[in-house]
Amino acid sequence: MVSLVSSAVQIFGAVLILAGFALAQFHVLDQRSLTYLVFNLVGSILLAIDADVERQWGFVMLETAWALVSAWGLAVAVRRRRSPSAAP
Image (cartoon, rainbow, N blue to C red):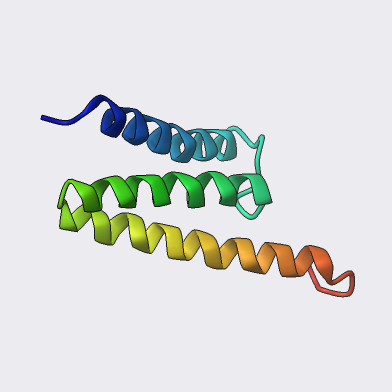
């Protein structure tokens, strides 16, 4: 049986990812914005950790890949913000 804490972590992680996606679809957030990328990174890390605890290996792989791609995009976005000469 999935614990209450595990369910809360799953819901919070999913809400972060889905909120970022929905806000991007409604043109409130850009998919390269720091907010969008942080939502995806934190949400996917939470889901990956929970999937690991529950030994759901397919979801561990999916969410870890999602987290790595989000982290890469976040690093690029931060680097772009710090470098005024960088192209948009």
